[in-house]
Length: 274
Image (cartoon, rainbow, N blue to C red; front, side, top):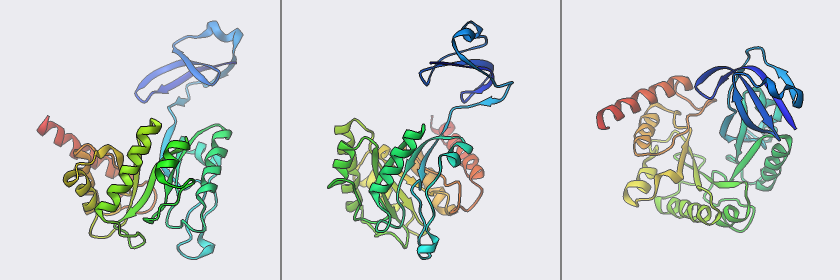
């Protein structure tokens, strides 16, 4: 029922020093410098000053496998729970990639439920690179409404592997996501893969500026693929948008450098305008 973590060097995420953590029914109920009064009632673990932090959220991970763009042999396997825990991820959002044919959206859902049963938080996006979004039910909106784990839909732009969706086609997708989210009491996200074509994020600015669609429902990813794309992504963030810097492949510089560069540009913008 109770677990007591002693002598934890806690970052939450700010450093608060060495503290004890009391957990009841898998929920943190107290953090204090001394919780010894619970020793007789709890299972005690001495962390001896080891660092404790909140778990990381990975909003873009191919938990059911990805790849396949170099033939069937290049398809990657499912992600194991141990791989996620090893890098500190305790919440994941799974999704499909280029392949929406041999990769099943229902298999992805099954993997989401599997990870949840193993003890972490797991969610998913329907859709894949193509404009013909693959769904578990008959539509994106229905997935959003009737399947608790579906947070939104994925699609690709500015990539030779994409369907080259127009602004109006994207507008209909993100509108369906937003309406489904409104009914299901979810935020609703259109998660957008970005390639390295010269069109970059132009169509996303069109959605926000020309069609006045709320920017908080649009989530571009791989924005550090090229320097020009990253510079444009910073402008998108300045409008109030959220951007995702890839930590693996598809990057023009090391991810931490892109983060520091983005913070510097954002801080300069805030200082000038606010």
